[in-house]
Structure formats: structure tokens, C-alpha cells
Image (cartoon, rainbow, N blue to C red; front, side, top):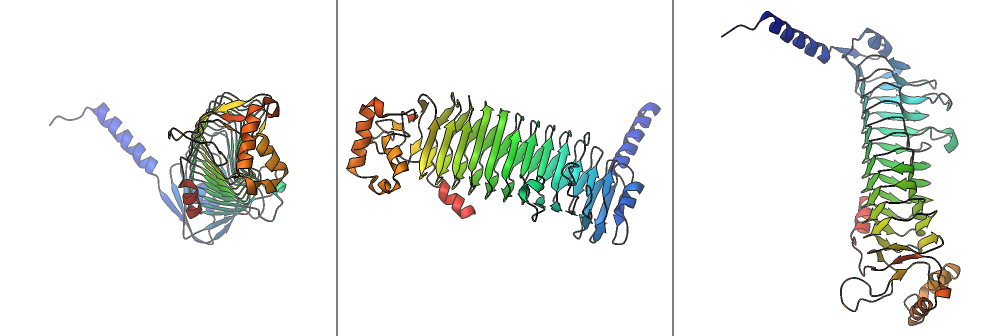
Length: 419
């Protein structure tokens, strides 16, 4: 067997040394010791294992390290500043309880603050409790925030709280499987692109997400409930909003404001004041959603045109569409639970268009008791008569091919079982 040349052997040796250095050493911290002392002593690539106990410290991590908890250790910020500040790329924090940051909104005090340049930060399975901001992540690429529980300063009034997770000027973030409650907004996103927000649970905040100026992001499989607003997506484009369950919010379930070129599909939006609030939204695809049992199914206005709205089920909303515009807008192929047309040819599609906001709708808004006569021949005749007299009509959403049966009859039952 031939021997390797000396230069090649040197390269192999260097590679092995780098591999061992990357693996790093493991340092242990026990109650009565200082975590900050271990951070100072550690070298880049080391792991610090923090054993169960109560550590009253404010930590700064300025080198690539892993902090891992064992036995539920608590890092207590003592009500001042950030509890943990990340100031280096390639930092991992897992299995810690992070408690009691400062309360200065101007200083943006946080349980964990990921400062600019701290790319590839990993924060996994931590409990962040009674912090002003749960996490503040600024100008960092490819962060991963997974499986954390975030509960804000619950005794503060909402305007005095910070947000659960704040993203500013980031790219490639993945925010997955987190539970957020009692913050100001759940996830606040500004100027952040190519991110994934998946399987998060957000409740008892102002907006589940407060979101603007951000592009090419995915919202998938989140459960957002009992907030003022569910998903508030504004001044954005190229979004995918899918498979979310949004219910019981006192204002809108999903807001699309100044949104273009996006896909909103397979969501269940129910029991909100307004299921969808759509304002100044163009060239979007809104399909295969269930919009059920809201006070208003869709509030549509502000030049929201050129949208492809098809295959949705509008079921049992007190007011299916609240539409403010100067001319009709065409949707097609949706199911409307208050449609009283017929299907003589058994195609599954109504023979006459569905028109929201017709004369009968306006009568029932003014005199709700008329709803008890909704299936009566008199009201059905009144709808038909109104269609023959254009002067009685107002601009409306018109579905030329309304479906006779819902496409997703089991969805509402599935959602109720999952709660």
C-alpha cells in the first residue's frame, strides 16, 4: 500500500483537528455556580450543560456555544435588561426556563435578544415566562425557533407588553411549534422574508400575528384563537397562508390588507366578528376555505379586485358578505348556506347566480326577526322579484356558479373535536 504524500497527510490532520475542535468540550454548571463564568471560560464550539436550579443572572453569549438545560434550570433576569443576549452566530439555547426580563419598551427588553449578525441561532424547547418581549430577533439569517412556550407579563396592560416573538429585518427564519399567550402580539414580523411559520398556537393576545412589509413567507397549520385579531397580514406579497384554524377572535379572523400575489387556502375561519377582512388586496387566490359562524363572513372593500375566489364554503355567517364598492365583483364556485336557488340539471351547481347583499339580506340586517321566515315562499319570491328590477340592487359579490353542497362538510366537526 502506498503512503500518502506528506502534504496530503497534513491536510487530513488539519481536517481532523478542526472536526475535534468543532465538536467542542462540555462544561457543567451546578446550583451555586455562575453560568456567566462558564460562558467566559468556554471556547467556541463548547457545550455548557446547566443543571436544575435557580440562577439569577443576565447572560451575554458572544461566541458560538450551546447552552443546554438538564432538570429544568431557571435563568432569572431579576427584572432588569435582557435575560439572555445572543451576540454571535451559531448559538444554540435549549431546555431552559428564561424568566423576568426588564420592562423597558424603549430598550426592547427580552427574555432572549438575538442581536444583528447572530445568524443561525437555535432556540428550542425553552420556557420564556414573564418577559417583556419573549424573543427579539433582529437582522439575523436562518434562525430556528422551535417548540418554545412563551407567556408574557400577564399583569401588564396590553399596550405595556412586548410581543411574543419579534422578527425585524431577517431572512430564512423558521418559527415552528411554539405556544404564545398573554403578550401584546403573538408574532410580530417586519421586513422579514423567506420565513416559515408552522404549527404555532397563539391565544389571548392582541393580534396572533402582526405582519407587514415582508415577502415570500409561509403560514401553515397555525391555531390562532381568543385574540382581538387572528392573522393580520398587511403590505405583503407572495404569501402562502394555508391549513390554519382561526376562531373566536373579537375582530377579524384573517386580515389581508394591501396584499398581492398570494395564496390563501384550506383554512378554517369561524366564530369571529369578521371571518376575513380584505382591503386593497389584488391578484390573490382564495380557495378551499371554510368560513363559518362568523358575524360577518367576509368584509370586502378598498378596491379588492382581480382575486380568484373559488371553492370556499360560507356556512351560517350572520352576514355572509359586507361589501363596499361601486360595482359588482365576480367570484365563482363557492357554497353559500343561504342560497335558495335550484339545480334542475343535477350538476351540483345552482341554476341562478348567488348575490350577496340583495334586498332580502338588507331586510334581515335591519329586522333580524325576518330570519324565521327565511325558507318561506314569500321571501324566496321577493328575492326573485328584486333580481328583475335593477334599481333595487346594490353592488355586490356575485357567484355565477354557486355550489349546492359544501365541499368540506366535515371540517367544522373536525375543528370542534380538535379544540
